[in-house]
Image 1: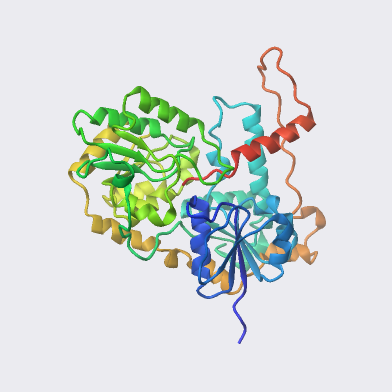
Image 2: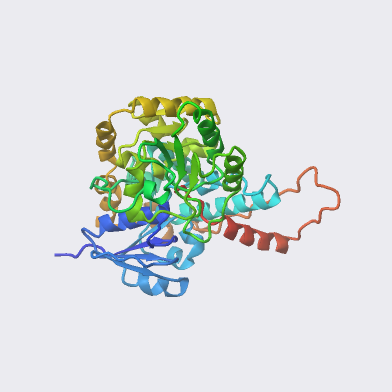
Length: 457
């Protein structure tokens, strides 16, 4: 009997006690695949975790080629083609996970205002994503709405063509939906929780939890203003931000995080009604924190990123049975509001957030209904399209045709991405130095490193 394909699953974030969203996703995808395959989960960042069913290790660009020699297929995050050309140059079937549209997230500038550096950084990300879309044999995304978005991108790049259509007219064989998931086991309070970490929070105080990082495309400021509105009518209300410093050292502290602290301090809320966890809650301890809360919250700006987002933190709220206040605009918030599991509010509206929080604290929905809804997102269920691909990993038909020279060389789908031309801003401040092309290249690299891989958890 033929052995199942051997899989190399890549990650670019730390696989440590504290893991950001992309690392959590890679961990669970690899764990599910390891039920049927020999799996190596390798990260180019720190790796201190272990798993009885798979090998977990750190790697570098230098030894990645050696790892690939013992693999039959690769599953990797977006940016893999630019980061590791050895992957793109191989003929191994390659699945690329596109669940975070980073170029949409980072339309929000890191500095005070958009400028040439910001434009260059986003253009660079677009180019990087283009490389992935040209090379991948199979793609993952987080929702049907995201799939529509990526289908448009693939069509623009020529990847939707007679070859891929004849391979599968539905194009599910090119890109399919694998949402972020939840564990099959219900959360259990094991060890110290949120109230232990913040002794100023009393045993009966209603707690609102922000269950992830603070990034520029979110709107924690309106949430803090809502807490300010509520403290006179609900004196015990407490808001906790669980992650102020992403464990990936490449992710900087963002502008909105600084503004958040300043606003909370200025309103006299810090360490009274608003609390900040300075680091990142260890992954295995998050249940104790979530189960100490009454309401989960995720508020964000009116932003194109919102429309295509799939918030990792919301899956944790569902897993813990928490009712939610969510800014409207994405598919998950619309579904949760429709089912009565939470309330969707307009963007940047502190009064609407305050009213929603007060309602959920006074009359929470049935937690059992929230947990039942979360069942559809169990990792062992959502991974099904990836599991199908991994059982018999296929190369995309158009890339196979190209490699056998069925298509003309000038139509190559793996050619380098075109250079993005940037024009000088029409109103440049007097005396501002014009950057040379070489300086712009260096600037791209520097800003891209600073931007890192934007994440939502």
